[in-house]
Image (cartoon, rainbow, N blue to C red; front, side):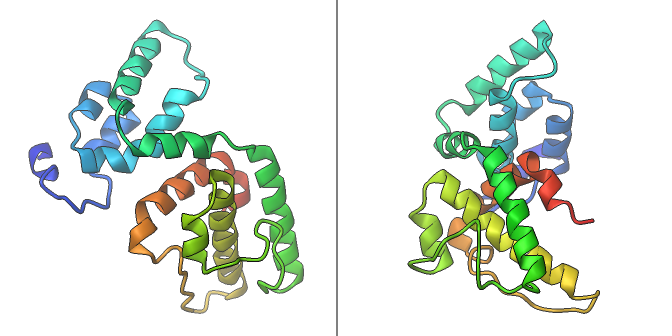
Amino acid sequence: MHGAMGDSAGLQFVSSYAFEAMQKVDVVRLAALSDPELRLLLPCLVRMALCAPADQSQSWAQDKKLILRLLSGVEAVNSIVALLSVDFHALEQDARKEQQLRHKAGGSNAESILVSQLQHGLTLEFEHSDPLRRLRLTLSELLAIMNKVADSNGEFFLKSSELFESPVYLEEVADVLCILQAVVYSTLSCS
């Protein structure tokens, strides 16, 4: 039942209720979500509210107003808007070049097109970076893991990731991953 879902302060998964509300763009149900449940959907909701819709109907215009009202006052929205404001075409081109470089180098992390020399550890770099650099750092780390998976020939391996394992930046990294999956999905396909 939905009411019990709001009691979980450390909620880190999308409930079936929230998923269905999102899938159907049921703004009444979305408005009824608890703050932790809504937080998990923010990247999708912000993107829905900001991107030009295929649906030009009056009902969508009303739903969009309700979504914007739902998002107003939520602190994390501004950082998500900033992430969505970068040049994704250039980012995707660099990601493809990075994939080619990693493939030629046999997965070595010696060089990176997406990320120049790190001054500090990955999480500290992430913390002090602008939105574009956060996207680049996360994408570079994700591509390194994807390359390792591709080169593993189905064998089990363990690859630690300072960025993906940091509980401090979990929400922000999840936002970045959600946006990357939505806008540079062809580069991230796992085929």
